[in-house]
Image (cartoon, rainbow, N blue to C red; front, top):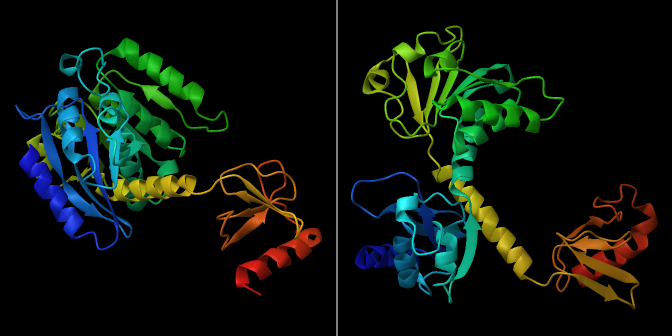
Length: 345
């Protein structure tokens, strides 16, 4: 473990070229043979380069944390509790975040939720493949934690959702709850069905999130809407049978999180950097101006800026309610004064 991780970190440090370096510690409820972890590929953004591991158990997360502390600028740790119970440590309830936090003292920790990355990845894919998601019928096969989030995401877009999981009692509770959560103004709804085939009947999109391998076969798909090109997305990795994958009538997409992950990690880093700088208010008595940081609810008349110590951009005038004043004519004098200070005049 140590040699492989050290090699990966040496590579990103070498290729950083002034960018922030990071290491990801994710966790899964799945299994990958006898291995306790696997490395993820090196990924890069404009300001960030990172690699990482997905671990099976808490002890593996702890071992990784001891290796990486201080070797990278940031550690992204999955805050979702997905470790199977048999892999819990002593009194930790599968909490890799807590274990990693107890071992990291030099690098900065940023948390994320792994399943949310996958959900966003599916949304990104369909947003490109389907012009009008609101007019589609979508089958969600495997309505557990991740499937439920995906079902809610797309019913809120206006799609009709047909959801299936083997435990019908639990499925009904989930579907009833999701239909209560969605906006009352959303006309589409989620329907609980009794089989994977029932879920696919009339659907043009099938999103398979089940733990069971090969749960969707060609017979399952016979009732799909033939008026639209069939779109199949394998979230659970192995949900479609080999015969479906080989059938030229279908195109099966993977829920590839790499694109969504890079952009969400970049946003998390920017948020960390923003809230790590000087936050609060700064009163400039001589000029009669009060500056307030982005991210705080400004009082009426305060000027919201990107940095209260060294402002370079004026966001606007706070209306005292969480929004900006629309008509800023009465505030023109102090805005011009501040802009003059920013410009050095």
